[in-house]
Length: 339
Image (cartoon, rainbow, N blue to C red; front, side, top):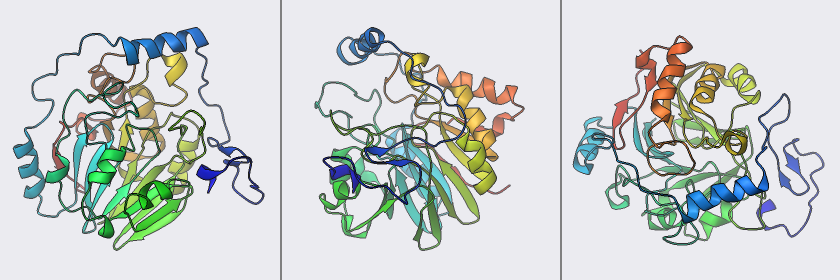
């Protein structure tokens, strides 16, 4: 397991994203580059971590009251549905399974307690109000996608299957999970009538000061009830998505990240702009695009509520009808229909 390696490991015979020092992004074609200077990077970190400025006003209706969110989820009565819990956390009901993605459901996503990344709105459902969870899908180890407090607080760990990238298994086993499956890109896992396939993403991993890219990062294809859903986790856009569309498309629904993109010189190498997110969805041949990774926490310099307008404008410019560009309220549940 790369996560625990003290030095280079033998990767002979491994896929090209395996290196002796860890993992790297997909090869082939041109990707955005990290071009920010050291001084500008420290200025960005100062703005975000030390002096973030006043909190923005949260628009009315941005999130549902929890009672309404719970009622909307229950009204589906187990039918295929998606619920946005905020940021990259979704509840998916598919193939008789309840799956949660990247569950950050506590207040802070930081190793420093109350210092750093703190959510501006609560999750769509509190941990104790969640329905019984069958599986977790984890995209990578950043704190706003892999929250130790949430992982530890989830009940019934003995019945939950964890699907995580290579190197993250011990994180969950050490917290009481028994069925933990580490996936390389293109690996498949079966959960009853649901199939989950790990897909390449353009990002990186790091949880401390000296573990850069020692664990893998991934997106996921989730199939069940005749639906094919893409979950991005964190990713930048790049040529790999056209290849994924050719190999796995079309998709009924793509959960694409539309926030955390300024300054571009720093962020475009690892995150999508709203315009990139639309292009990514088109590459995958997705029928519906659902924007996430916005409206929960201030991670970067763009206005918190700028991404939705740019996402919808980019979709319209690409000829996508508004009813295929989903922008959900936190806590909202929508049915997954083929028509």
